[in-house]
Length: 258
Image (cartoon, rainbow, N blue to C red; front, top):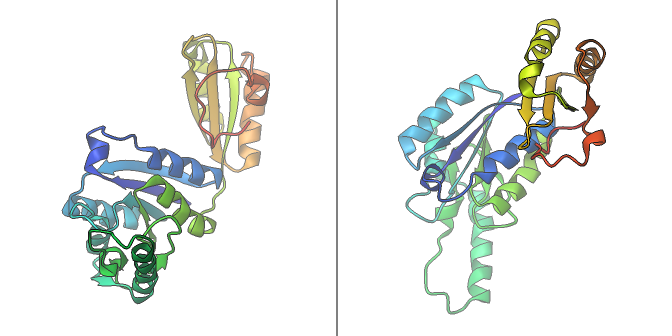
């Protein structure tokens, strides 16, 4: 499965907040063997978002979109997805009922609340989409064709994703090994590795430049294991597995396994 991630928000482009949603989703998908082929940040601009959805929905098996889903003028994600899929934006009846019940509870618990909340602000989505419950907030997500729309608030995004996590699976495997050799010394053996095996290779020196983290990614355990074994036996470089390098202080992608 090949997936793409679209994160929507002017605040992301301005650097006001860190794009943790993209990092978390990429790791969650990689853990499930999904190949994350693209990640992009786009502004709160409906035509821009719609164009990206239209293009990537046709190109990838799944597109995951995170952004504001309702309640303020800059929440353009749902109408943009509807436009990108050439669908009408409607108030979904099931979502409207669920959101209405949540709003009623909010007013009951906060009788002095000084502003209005309307279900239609949060229950609008592309026609014929399937709502995805949001246990952490008002606005549900939805899935329309192969496009999954998730909230922008990280806690809500994770809760909504958990409801559809079973939709994502693949055979992409990543193994991590370490070498005391500097990155430059590894160029030749790693280049030969990619010529011999259908794998992708990444090399990442740590801050002290006294060891290099190497990732080998491919389709299935057998292919990746064979490539790592070849690297250990024939590349004439010293390697240790990720588990043997627990004392290493590098930042590490949680989706990588040793």
